[in-house]
Structures are given as C-alpha cells and as structure tokens.
Image (tube, rainbow, N blue to C red):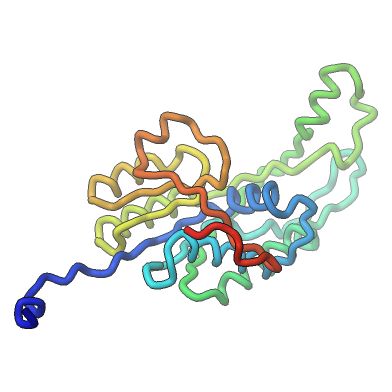
Length: 236
C-alpha cells in the first residue's frame, strides 16, 4: 500500500489571486463599514488584507493585486472664489499616500498604480445641478463646495486585463477573485475561463447586472474582519 501511495499522482496546491479595483473597494468599504470616514488608512489596509485571506485562506493566496491611481498633486483656482486649491495638501491626498504605504508593507501585496488625468475643467456636483434645474438654486447661489475638478483614472482597466491574461496564460493560479462591480472585466474574464481558471466576482454587496452571471463562475459575499471586531463573524 505504501509503494502504491508513493506513485499516486499528487495534485498541485490550489493558488488563488485576488485582484482589487481600488476605487471601487474604497467607495464600497466606506459605504458599508466606514460611513463617517474615521478609520485610519492602516486599519483599512488591514481590513483589505484580511478580506483577501478570508476569500482564499493563507495557504492558497498567490498574491493580492491592488489597482488604483496616485493621488492628484496639483494646484487649480476655483472659478467661484478664484482661490488656489492645492490638491497635494488635501485630506484625500494624505489618506491615499498613507494607505498605499500601509499596503506596501503587507505580505503578498502588489500595487498596480495608474495615473489621474485632469483636463482643468470644474463641474457642478449632481445634487447642486438638480437644485438648479428645479429652480431651488440660482447660479449666484453656487458656492465653491458645489464644484469639483473633473478627474479620470488612466490605465487601470488595462492593468487589470493584462494581469488576468498573464495569470491565466502562464497557469500561475487556479482561481481569480476580482473585487469590482462593473462589466469592464468581461473580456479578460472570458479569456481566463477559456484557460480553465475559476473566475469569482466579489462585488461587496453592490448590485450587479444579471448579464454578468454569464461571464463568471461564482459570486462571493465574504466580508472583512474589522478592527476591534470579535471572531464571531462568518468564515469564508
């Protein structure tokens, strides 16, 4: 029997990669667990790392790929007050910088940082636009807080797609778990599934279009273990 066991084929250990759309993750995390935005960047980084471990298990985690953009570090003049706005000194800039630094110190985390593209255009917030259209506010009533700089991410979707293709074609993992909520990943998911990779979507309780179920192998609803939380939360 022992000789027989020695010659039995040993299956390679399962490897799972967790890919995180950073902008989506932070938006959903704040909506679900950090509504007052009082949590420190390091604590949120801990929660993200813990979420990945709950999704995979420490022995099967291949790597966490986190996709985001470097925060904007420019000055612009608000068109209403004409005052200079230094985005490099904003709370958001400081948060992103500290959050990325905390992630860099985590085991098995790879940051994939794109860039932010600004065209210098200021836009009116949707709520203020609704009030203008309803006649509840006039242009003269607008304040500097009713405006925001139009900023777009550049290169994030491409980085996610390239990594999914690379992981699948090189047979580096058996399963890919994507933390995201839109359909931009569908072409890359199709390729991964054709290569035999199990593709799981983790939308963090966000609604997803029914058509997306055609392009994934499963849906996850695991939640992170938050700081000061007991171990009574659900297991993966």
